[in-house]
Image (cartoon, rainbow, N blue to C red; front, side, top):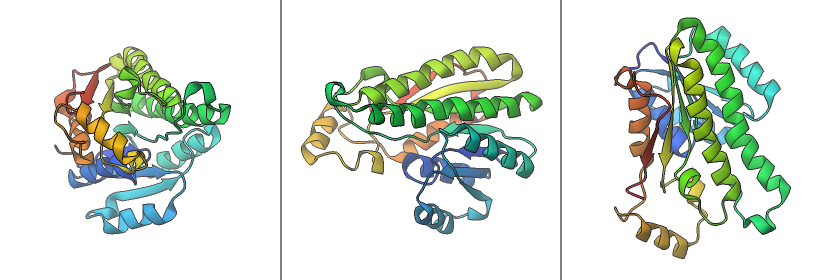
Length: 244
């Protein structure tokens, strides 16, 4: 995988799966713009520790806010002539049974996970159409297909990312832009670090490979879809779940 002279945006790119994706693109020679919403210390630490960190650009904003997203794309346009890859990875969880879920928990998850994908994808398409090339990859979840108890908001947002990718792929395919989804299962990241120990054991017992995945195993699939080797794959979903 060679991404020299390519410019890649990874939303939520300084922690968890996003950090693994950013690291993988840097290792493959790319220039990465990693976005984050709030944790300056974690973002700066990630950049300082990363080999090739001089090619990592940090940008802080909220992907669910239209004005902030527009400002981001204007700034990126001044930094790079072309964006080659967008990874829509920014996401949050606010679990709870639907009957007891408050409206704020529903709105926050849908805003970040799905509206953020829409806003960032819109900016990417406008940028990529100029050069008639681009790769957009939505980091969805197997939860968007299977559904997990207590995650109605999260599952709905992730299913929405899949539907959005399938629709967008048909709109921009003739412009040389592919749009795909990666569906991780249980991956060892901060996103699931708050799960009770008994629940972790139960989830692992459901995985045929009897373990949670590693962020690097997800990043490898993302790099493939972003590469020229995946030039005829669009509107597709690839599961990285250990067999769930």
